[in-house]
Length: 289
Ligand code: GDP
Ligand code: K
Ligand code: MG
Image (cartoon, rainbow, N blue to C red):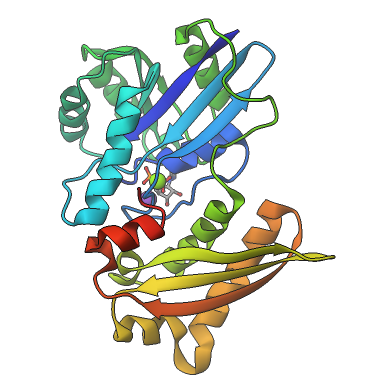
């Protein structure tokens, strides 16, 4: 069967996580309109009778400003190295020259499929111009335009990917959809709510760790810590009379229950860890290897 690693690259907000979710038909990667939402490399394994594709969503490509950023770019680098096929994702409304500069600088040696995303947001003419622009690039061995949000043309894209994959034995069992733990996804779903509910800096100073994950008779009990850098951020996350943390909890629980297909009891705590984003020990503890 056709089998291999398919890695998704692109600028922040191109729609990489949305595309992974559309491919998997399942929410694996958190999505937000804010840049730098994705911090890890998230694998989605898609097995059909004639292929197994291991997709990787990666953080957007940025200049590292602090150690957490360096870890994020290491996640990008590791997926540059093991790809069989690269998906180069472009928001049709983005600056194409800048996307092109990044794609050229990756110096990819594997077949690259350029994907013009968010076709639902642009005129036919702009889409056609984007197609012409990227088709002329030396790294572009195939091109498709689609809307990851609407799932339009995703099946077509999969066909093109399959054609470019080598023959081989599957790496994962048929029913495996990811290599990451349930705990990881639970923490991500909580983190996503922080991106939804708080403006400006708060999400970038925050991470989430799941401390407890216990199957009880009728539900799963989950305890998680929300880590911030300063006391002031802690009081913002908690909110007046605990209003905000309650909101995070309620919204996260709904998504976690859907993800785990189980009733969930969720307990959240906020902890202050000054400069955790710069601290190797904290970064390791919070899963940024
Ligand atoms: P990433 O940073 O590349 O992972 O991008 P995300 O997947 O987090 O998406 C960034 C924003 O673009 C989110 O608000 C998405 O809902 C939105 N988005 C992604 N794909 C599409 C699309 O095909 N059409 C539209 N209209 N929005 C999209
Ligand atoms: K994003
Ligand atoms: Mg993302």
